[in-house]
Amino acid sequence: MIKFLDIQKITDSFEPELSEAVTRVVRRGWYLLGEEVAAFEKEYATYIGVKHCIGVANGLDALRLIMKAWIETGEMREGDEVIVPANTYIASILAITDNRLKPVLVEPDMTTYNLDLTQVERHITPRTKAIMVVHLYGRACWSEELEKTARKHNLKIIEDNAQAAGAVWCGDDSGSAVAGSGRCGADAGSLLPGTAVRRTGSLGDAAGNSFYPGKNLGALGDAGAVTTNSDELAGVIRALANYGSTKKYVNDYQGLNSRLDEIQAAALRVKLPRLDQDNQYRRLVADYYHRHINNPGIILPRSDTGAGITVNPGHVWHLFVVRHAERDRLQRYLAENEIQTLIHYPLPPHKQQAYRGWAGLSFPLTEQIHREVLSLPVSQVMEENEYLKVTEIINNFR
Image (cartoon, rainbow, N blue to C red; front, side, top):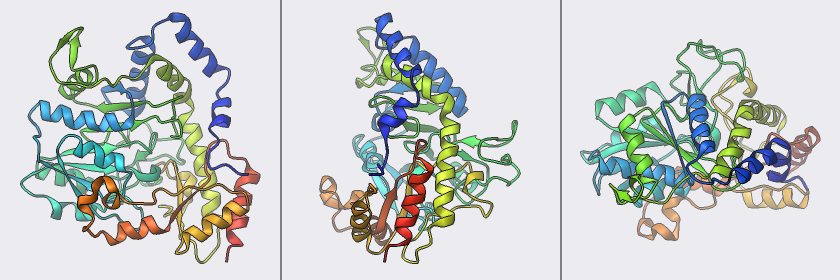
């Protein structure tokens, strides 16, 4: 069986350093708000290119805390609107509604599956206070026009960076980075120093990052972080994540218990230095799929550059998502041939029971995507014979 994602194999690839890091924490006997968290926050902030990184319990909390902090500072209030992709994982929506804010769903660009940035401005109303972009499947979603629109209407931009750790935006307006644009290096692993290149997680006013074990940068359990350049926002979020406290047993806000623990931080510190290398290997696998899958029924993800996926730093291929009109039959066929796949995602947020009040809403592009998408195996530990077999089996599907 070719696993969709072999987390054990990924974990083993970091040994013995990973076990040594965990042992270091255990022997120190300090498990929260300690040296490992402080060091990881500094290292990840430097990697992303921001002033502040605040470790939290998970990616959902990271998004929730951003908006909760803006409510505390008066930037938002209950009932305000946040523009968000209709095609996203439900956590993006939960973070908004948990803060008693109103999600305004916008259809995706069918070539990227990300938010259609050309449709954002027409959804802005006097109650709109923020735009949330989701770097879905690992593809950077950004444009200079989006930044101009946000400034024009005095809106915050939130990044859901749960799936795109390490992705880069090089300054084009297509919603993703393309090497060779003059701001990127010759390949995805070598960015030109001193240029306008920016990583996802540093593009907006604040970003929610997830380090769930299956992510490109994955912890040993749930973990997340907020990244931002705002001193005020960082201070409020840090307090809110610690019961609303900046001083022990003194609470300034009605906060949460959402703290990154020392073991997770230690594990992430082992994995972070190899993130660019791991992402580049994922690009290699994705590039092979893109060049060699030749089945008329399969719709491949957009490559963004004629030079090949391996030179595009704007996509880290957290997921390699294809579409097929008979997706369920394709998935059964692959399973019969011992290839494990997953669906990201079978139901869009507006069709979930959790949001049954939205059942009458219609987002035909989003609904089509959810009927047709299938994620193929892709990871930094996938063997060549495995992705060759996946390609061969798919090409034989009729």
